[in-house]
Length: 467
Image 1 (spheres, rainbow, N blue to C red):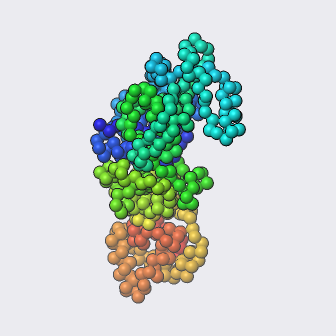
Image 2 (spheres, one colour; image 1 turned 45 degrees about the vertical axis):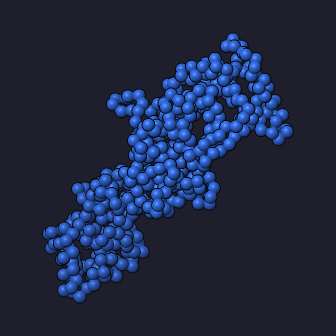
Image 3 (cartoon, one colour; image 1 turned 180 degrees about the horizontal axis):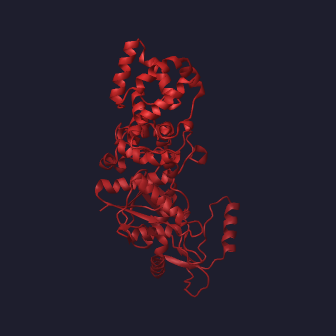
């Protein structure tokens, strides 16, 4: 059975690259009926925080990624945490020492630094010289590290995406597995965890490729079968460089806060380095059905916010209006809106015109705030309302006499009035729209009147007749 994992460090927010790695592993597991494991790599105690872990879990859940096992907490799975597994790392190191695939090293920091300086002076890669390899040091040797014994030869990474990548073991060094303070190192604990959790496949970013030969050597030293590795190209900015904060938002949470939909984010991330013919729009179910590792490309993906907005706009239109309304509610409330029973109708009137929930709430705020708080475009008022005061004054009694304030009834009544008076509907619609919304663009006139309601609509038109 395929078993995959996502293993973030809780030292910062969930980056879009990490989210894509998590999603590709999740999609692989779901596609083949495998298992997706979430493991928190929190051994960096100085930088890891529960707050960052909580954010990572929240953003994974927001995208729609769930995991299949872990400690049971109130009927749901908590992630595995490395800090809760330290005993297993010590036991693995002891097994390697007993097998002779690792050894104790008492070399001082000063000696290691001197080796580094000498190598740099010769323009060589710094590496440990093996001083303690064959000394047979025991546990009573004093302060020491535990190092991996790396024998001469080659290590081949049979990469699922890149193909075979060959490394000279002479360049890999006898890496430290356990530090002097007893803390295990990253590459060691990753391998121990993947062995214990029977991980069969690892899809991760290109930046981890140089760790893979070191990890393969540790698997060999533990007499364990390694997973299949696939290293995905990085996500670049539109200039073809590694993304940074200068490129705008780089964490998933920033996009959630800016009103993107989880369906839009999942769809866009999936297409960022993976393809399935010419199809651009995918639901989660479609992604699960179509996903294969072979579809992951070798070229870096480029983060294109305009493309993300296009994808998100599709899901703004395609999802049930009730779901859009539920996700948009916090954005309206944050803008001081007091929502009414016409709220879902307002979202229905607005959503086709907007790409994010923020745009939706900004545009629809006029429905749910007092008249004095409606943002007014003074230029639009001067252009469209002031010259139309006689027309607004003439139509006002017609609207005041209208009891049925439904969209269909309003359309029928105003259309008939325009025909009877020889007024073009477009000439009436624009000044009325500006009176109601404060802007010259917005939803359809009859939708706007119906959602805003009779009293608020009449009140704002009366104000418009004053110029």
